[in-house]
Length: 305
Image (cartoon, rainbow, N blue to C red):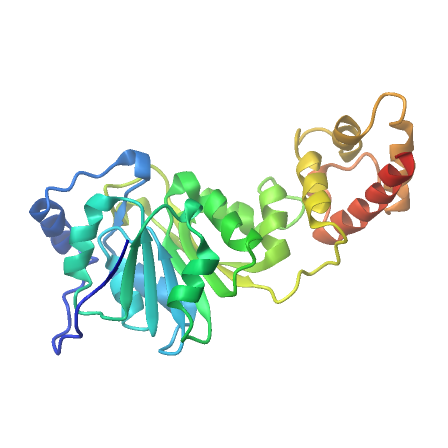
């Protein structure tokens, strides 16, 4: 179900992102927030301004928002982008969004679960007349990674992904090799994007307040990956296998995943041929090293039949 909202009014609409306006709307519609949907409404206009600025929108570009809530961020996107589409899973919010977004005819709300939505079809339907599209959203913590990975793996024609997420997850996405935050998520995100943490968001600027702080991260979608990979699926499989037990060496993790007791003796030679010491841990390897390793490993496994 898609709703197109209203006519542009000559009067500027009141900003939604304030404690007063947010509480008014919640009370007016008798809305109860669902913890299961990760509903935390932002009440700080400055943070919204930073999010929208990071997306580099203009009247010729489009914005896809996931989980608009009561429309605080949607309203700010509507002031900047030429086309805004917001996907909302909670049907109870639709009447509220109809009211708050009425002044903006170039905004559409789609009722649905973004993880089950055909995003290519959504792009073809709604973004035909814009030059570039960015995802801009305050994502629920519990589905952050599945949503971001769906956006990247489907290779949608995106310019940026600017999202507010749990600070800990943002740190992992932007992490460099060698640290405790660096892992398979870091490599997957950096394969598709250039990440940059824009700002840290304290938990006090939400209704209700979450238990942890958030961060706004900007993912600039790459035109092509930074490394050459023959088989993306196998590359990511090798990366994930390397982090199954973080305290184990790359040798032990890969031996458990790809070799039997009889064949694992080959692995030391494969690693050395790839320029990687078998005693290293997965968190010390760069994305370039994983690219070389996956190529050597695939060739050896192919020879083994």
